[in-house]
Length: 132
Image (cartoon, rainbow, N blue to C red; front, side):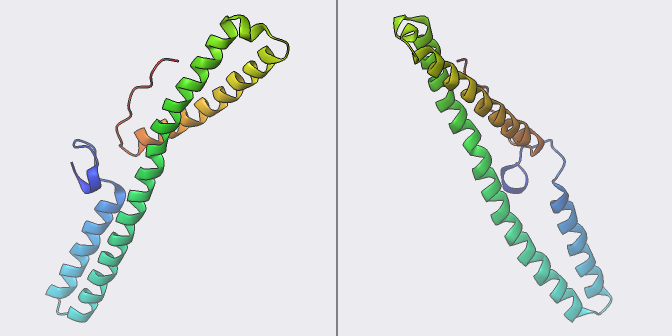
């Protein structure tokens, strides 16, 4: 794993390459005798890096919600589908309400798919969804 739990084999995130370039610049300034400028640059880079780590942890937490929402949604959709297949789904008004549940849960499912796609782009492994 590379920076903050990113899978091996993926290129480093752009911010990691930027950090390396900035640290190289700080070293070059040190070697050129610009010690105060190098120290200031290094302090800024390390402060930014710490903030980036905090941001990345929050992003991973938000993206982790995808899995939790999707798991709950499987139960909601499955139960609504089962109710539609038995006599309870035939009661007046019930069928229409269950169809609303299925339609709206489909919208939620589409939104969680976009989160899943975002997780893939960011290099986070995506668990396989369970069947409804």
